[in-house]
Length: 161
Length: 367
Image 1 (cartoon, each protein chain N blue to C red):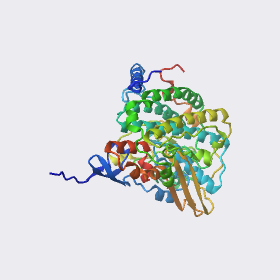
Image 2: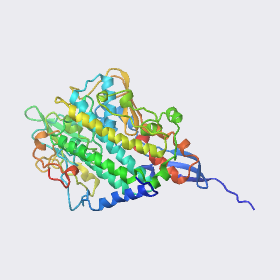
Image 3: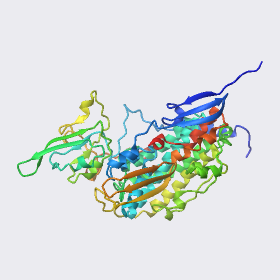
Image 4: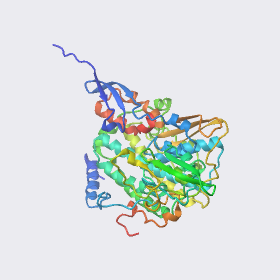
């Protein structure tokens, strides 16, 4: 091999030129979207009214202390949930509440775009989080994960799977 | 007539593109030559050690994500090792393998960022960064599939890992492993023999072996000086004693050596992952740990080889559900103590290069 000054630079240039004819690894975000992971810890918490018993395990587990649960004694001697509020402005989306819920009544959200004009509209009430209105993610819920579309991976880009 | 000169004090940072976060260096210059340097940090201080004192042992795991935010998995693991040592928790076999796979993937991803930003500081603005981020994206995709997020994974728990891997994970990981050597080879061709890089980085910012040991440096900074010191070999944690890998070292401890050590370490990480995939057993992924862990009164220190160096967690328990004290031995901070001695005598442009070759993360320095 011949060695001359500038050989290393030329070798590098060859790499950058081959990169010109390669398929692009990037995605033009607002127009093109990738399917996210089935377990994504998205921006909304999702709550099931029928499954929740008001035990407030989630509120005690939350490291940020943003889950607010108020209950009263119901007719069958159980808890009736009056308030179930999450201040998602302080939520760090760690998913520990979903993991801790003994009745599988909490889910992470599947969507990831959530901006609001006012700060107090970040506080989510029972209705905002109802599972009937919000798509739930498969985080700690394998039965939901099976129904979600498969994640698009960069390793399979440009390849038939 | 004689010209009178006087030293000039320059504040680099706290917001400067080369400081990788918010870090200030008070540099005293004589012309272009640095005669004194005073690091000023604390801009990103969030009081994580204090916050940990009022959280449950499981609730601290998301906090550890926010230390070295380019290497969350190893932070999780270091903390979980400390809790397991403190409370005497056993970890199932499959969880150990998953931990090794995840932390080695994380090491590759973190080294890619370190190398990419080092080249940025060299002046190869964002061209190498593109290549590094392309491959990092493949790894981050995989970690997202497992943990649900791309940066702050919160994946490991005292007593195992949070969830088992989905069935499509291992085929995708094997595909990524097949592609990686080709890409690492591409980085080598891109810049390894580059003459400009030789001129900029070879023999610049030499850290003598004796000084590196005496300041307590670790990770690629120490190994770049030629010291064979890797916690994975010296004090094997988890199941690292079952894998075969080498410790790459540099020769003289300059910026170029530190860059080479990182590249070689990525190859070794690939080797470890390949072995781990072959050996991974079926079984449970989390031992039976109560939701509120109450370790006995005592103290424990656990450390591991994070991408930046030796990351340690020192926990003191008073028998309650929260630690009495949580101290973090941050490798970035320890490595930074060598900064002044390495930079004095070099010029301003070398300052940026030497600082970049440490690959510190300010989240870990300030905590």
